[in-house]
Length: 162
Image 1 (cartoon, rainbow, N blue to C red):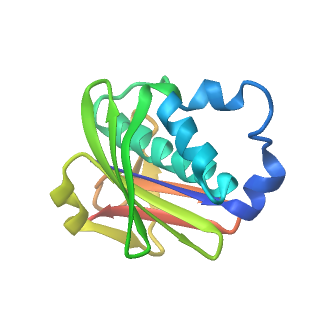
Image 2: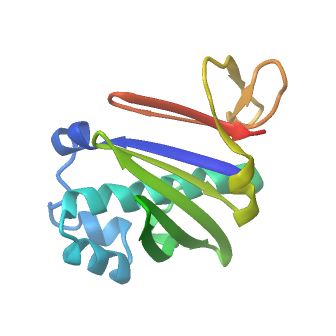
């Protein structure tokens, strides 16, 4: 399954104070907090990790519908920057997920899948009509195929499988 997220870094700067007491401890593991503390751009790293976690949550919802969202349980095992793209391995409840993230024009775009090979099938959808299924998850209106929708600030992205 697929999940995606976008974060407008310009808007995130004004909407949330991630430096407030307890914020990082509630959302990020010790190793993730180390990534943040060691990052050249800590603001960007906070929201990159958040975007990865949100994408995994959405992908996991498609597999095991669960209304609870517990970001601290979504553990980013590795994060590598290769050719302008962050690649991540993430674990939730012992289940591995894989993420790819890009930052362009101060907008983070992340896609998470359960199988690495699924990245070959991911596509951005433009002008798609969608409705919500019985669990409140978005599906393409005409085909009924599952999609993932994310919007924040200046960006809205809908992704699905070919």
